[in-house]
Image 1 (cartoon, one colour):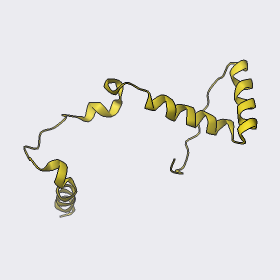
Image 2 (cartoon, one colour):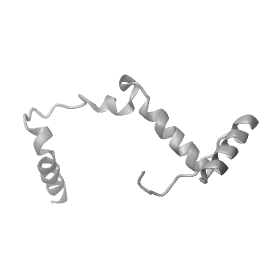
Image 3 (cartoon, one colour):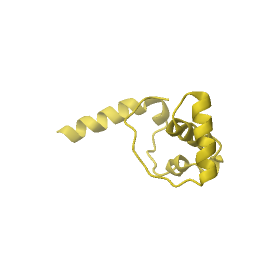
Image 4 (cartoon, helix red, strand yellow):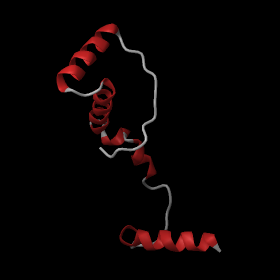
Length: 85
């Protein structure tokens, strides 16, 4: 996983969950937070495709360009350049 600035959050665990988390963290030599991050990644990978929020982006617009998937960088660069003028 790429090291980016992490966003702090607060969660509430059941006492038993916290105990298991503490034991796992100590046994594996990593922080509780790292176990939670890894668990979330695993959970996200198991989300059914139709529930993936990114799937909502498909079909949002129509460019009428047949080569958009191959030439997207050129189209984006051209668009960015036109906005600077």
